[in-house]
Length: 118
Image (cartoon, rainbow, N blue to C red; front, side):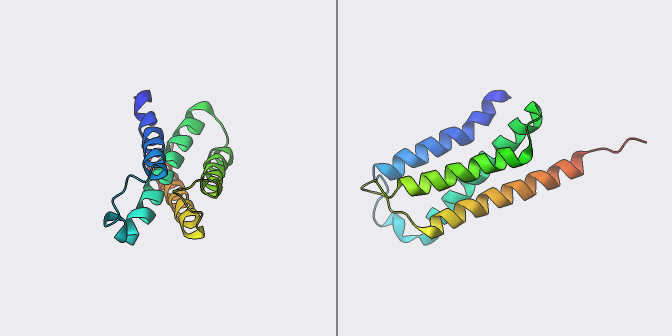
């Protein structure tokens, strides 16, 4: 079970390497939604993993979420220095959308699965 939590991390690393080495075909990048969806999925899944780990280790939720937010900001700012990448506010926004959706989904999931003592 614990190794399943590494899947989003592997996806993040693979997506970053893929984008850094410009491995996407030019005609494939015409689909504007692909990049946006990628940011939402990658940072949403990283947020979910951070929240699961925070819950198990009894770490405050705000620390887990803020860690992923900082990663998203650093990831986007690092693109100012990479040849094949470009900093865009839209990418950062989509990463934050993924983080927010994952947080809301996780919070809803926890509320629905918590049983009240009778």
